[in-house]
Length: 119
Image 1 (spheres, helix red, strand yellow):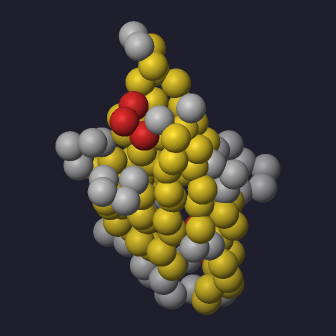
Image 2: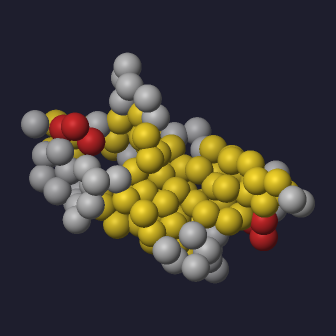
């Protein structure tokens, strides 16, 4: 089992910055990729960014050049640095870990942290 705890959300004005953190605990040796998703009211949850154990990153087109995902394996923590925030970035942000369990993979989710960007 892997537990994820997010922090760092809040209210910020457009153009501002926030850094989200996601700390993993439990069977952390089994974690493969980690990522951030977001879900706005009435919309589907969407990938924001993810990062593999080797450091390969993927970003949604809407955040490229503004958000940076990073991973500190020693602290079992993944970060999302969000710059030049826009009102459309307002959403609940959720951390996800892809966990290897034998020959299968499953996803573990955090509880989420709210990001609100005012115009």
